[in-house]
Amino acid sequence: MAQPLPAVEAENYERCMTLARKDPSAAWESALAWQSRGGRHPAEHCAAVALIGLGEYGEAGKRLETLADEMRHAPAELVAEVLGQAGQAWLLAGDAPRAHAALTQALALAPNASDLLVDRAEASAAAADYAHAEQDLDRALTLDPKRADALTFRAAARRALGRLDPALADAQAALKLAPDNPDALLERGNILRMKGDAKGARRDWVRIGLLAPGTPADDAAKANIERLELKTEPEGAVPIKPQKPPAKRK
Image (cartoon, rainbow, N blue to C red; front, side):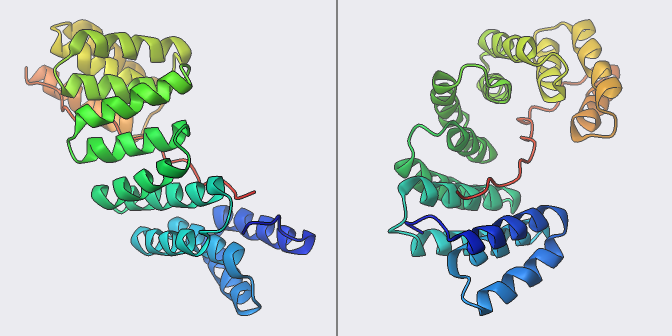
């Protein structure tokens, strides 16, 4: 939509998007009813976000891509936002190539959006293309040097590329910004183990259990401690980025 929403439509949109995060099933029904009354793009967007909440990631990705195409005359930043959300949906669906394609389209419209660069790096890493992941993370960190998540992901990509010293520097920098970040602790532990510092790796992994018990990072840390006991290497997977809810369209 090229013009701001009328007040009543803006209120409907705000209400629907809030509901999509709290009760996606109810939001889905509300969005469908709104569409039947001519809600058009805002209603379609809320429906797609509700589908993400319902775990229908592939269908959400398709709808968001279609919506972005229908919004071709809207401001570029709005279209880029919707395409970015499509990329997130495809990542959640496990379709890295389609996520990468959607995010590349988004970045063509908003080349300096650090969130889009980090998301595309995740898509590259999911396809084991760590070199391109590192390139996007370099750009993201140039735009926003204080992103602990981007530093953590770049540390993981560099570890996967066998560049342990710069990987460790990134993990240390991430933990300086966010000392209790479980993903950064997991990554630093992985790097320390690969550098032969088993004691330091264990310390980081044990700390995750104290800070974030029951989380994916804790599960990975416990598995790595078990591998440490068996004298095998930790898993080399890039840590999964914590899911963030799609942003609201303005």
